[in-house]
Amino acid sequence: MRLVDSSMERGKPRILTVGSFDTPHLGHYSLMRQIKDLFPFSYLMVGVNRDDFIKQFKGKKPVLSYKERVKIISQIELVDEVFPNEGGADSKILIKKVNPNVIAIGSDWLRKDYLKQMGFTAEWLESKAIALIYIPRFLNVSTTLIKSMIRQK
Image 1 (cartoon, rainbow, N blue to C red):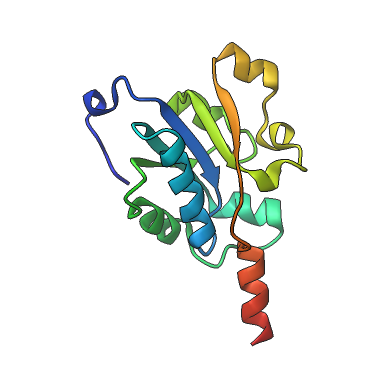
Image 2 (cartoon, rainbow, N blue to C red):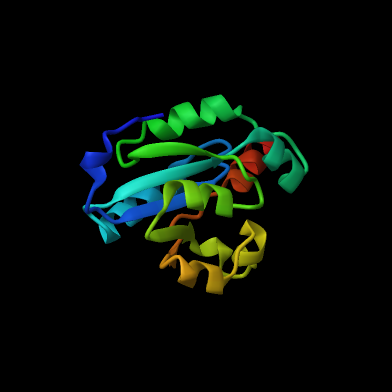
C-alpha cells in the first residue's frame, strides 16, 4: 500500500473505486485510466475486497490472495492509495474512512443494484456530498471470461 503525506492530496478530488480484482486484467487498468482521464488531478483510492467477502459473494475463493491482489493493484501508476474493503457488503465503512468526493464503478453495474449491494442509498450518498459515476466498459474482458478461457484450454 502506498502511504502518502496528506498534504499531497489536499485540494484534489478524492475518487474511490472498489473491486475484487481477482486476476487483475486490462479491463481493471482501463477503468482506472478512464477515471484519471476524467479527473486528471485526482487522488485515486482503490478498495480491494477481502478473500472472505469474495467467497461469500461469489461462492468461491479468489484465484489470487488478498495480499497478492493488493500488491498488484498498488503497483499501478494511476493508483495513489489502496485500502482493504473491511466492511464487505457494507461499503459505508470504507467510504467513511477514505472520505471520497466521487465513487467510480464500471458500467457493468448499471443492470445490477449497486447501491443495495454496497449497503447504502442515494440519499446517504447525497448527505455525504458523494457523486456516483459509471465508467463505460470498452473492453470485452472480465475475470469470468478469463477463467472460462483458461478452463477451455
